[in-house]
Image (cartoon, rainbow, N blue to C red):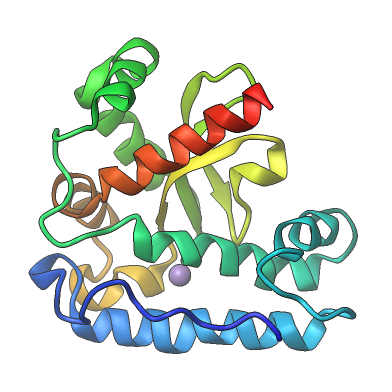
Length: 204
Ligand code: MN3
């Protein structure tokens, strides 16, 4: 066993004009696959889904070259699931909506912060909705392949702001891409799942 590339959870053309089949073919089949191949190649031990997150955190401290691949594998694994056809907008599951209301000023506050943070991330990286150890939500961005786990936080939602994620469909208009992601693509059900798993972890 080694890390493998999961299939997309929808057809390549399922996200319509918001993210084209051409983007998904390059991004999933080539970019994500390359992170997996290089991660398997660089790792001194056999990686699998169970030992992968501890290996990513170890590499974050000790092996930047390996971390780049493993961080990006984690980020993309969820990125495909953080989108769905007819997603996005204000249709938030109840518990999630309450927490976004109290910590971020509701959907509108979240939307503004998420788009600003993603637009403001200089160079390649990711923008996140994350939960800290006290269960408080925050919007943050990270560079390159980093993610909130590296900083002891739970990622609930992430959007890839590397140019390979939007250049075919939006050219250099990163803000338009982020607006489309928030308004039409976010799979809130997956965000809610990660939120309840994160709450369980805190109790345990
Ligand atoms: Mn990417």
